[in-house]
Image 1 (cartoon, one colour):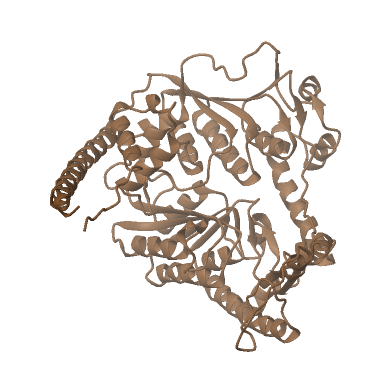
Image 2 (cartoon, rainbow, N blue to C red):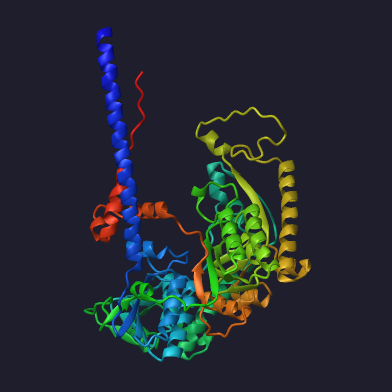
Length: 580
């Protein structure tokens, strides 16, 4: 066999050289294609969108505009990403002074909208009508349930509301419901142990009680009342009736389309043969209009917009956890604060809260902005509670929608122990530990009374820190904060009357606050720049690959098809081989 060894080794070396050469060629091709793809993306982003001399602007609100950071323009153009809520509001405001826009046509659906989004859109459409004196038409197949309430709030800003004869008017009120799972967990052998600070910090009750406490019932009824009153304001204004009269009317719902017209809730009943999505005349979609919008004039003050949504993670949480990465958000704020070309910052938060450590990390950067006199305005989305309010409390101006849920100044901690469930399933867990509290975080062993007492002590300290932090940011005494704290959730309208927010409104109100802090006229143009970290080319390519399907590739612009094909080649990998 030895006589064949030398030729075999020579053949192996030859094959390995060929393989390395092939990999080198593929690498060069990869770089070339990536460069071509980047050029294609750049070219696509710079393409001018031409609009007709006159047109109707159409808004597809069958689903709510996402309240997230906007995608880079080139990625949005390439993938057809839906306009964000901020982009939608800005486009409506821009259209009010655009002579080409002859009116706005809105298609509403079951996915639109939560009350905060609905109220922002309603206010923007009302401003459009007041400034332009042009028509707004809202059409819907139906107004049903909780989503129907939000959609109808949007519709009330229109000159004319059209409802299909195939649908109905099912706006019957507003309801908040909470499940209580203590009995189920007990049946399953799962023990829920929680401690909390604050009479109204009632979230643990979902797992520890079979029904709500008196405090939870009080808070839920207060929230439901405030939210419903907020929703009734635009409806009552349109119908020219009192809120009590509107309540009495909606208590009789649901109505047929014909009855809704008779009661003045809609203006037109569309026949069954009508195409609900059809717009008469020349029209331009919102995304097209946004793509054609001119940039801010030279010299306009720059305002960084930073958007964050989701649970606030711990600083050491893995990136794949989703939600708000506090390290990243803190860095984005710090960069905007340090950038001398940025005159002000608008921080849009939509979060139920999260970890103390993550909230403190981001809150420190918000406080730093205040210390260096960089105006930072907080715009609250649907939620800005607990840890979210910790972050917000040191903002220069806090803006909340009347339906925002905020406050919840309180702390809680707890865990579930699955030892009983595992035992029922025939799984026995054995442990060897050292240290009296080595199993403190165990998902099998419940806490001892001493461990629960230790947790309660930690929470006491955290609550005092929370109270002190908010008091410093809001210029209140700790006693004043504690009086509106105790874990209680407030609507934006309630929070304003208690000193927890400064103004009511959404993005528009936040940018108006920025103008005021910069001593600018109310109509002064602003250059709104993205403050969120922008993805690199690799992330853009990955985004395109995730969004595209084999059937959708043909729909992509030509410069992107080769780039997408390249990303698929990367799924083939070569394992280094060595012959000895």
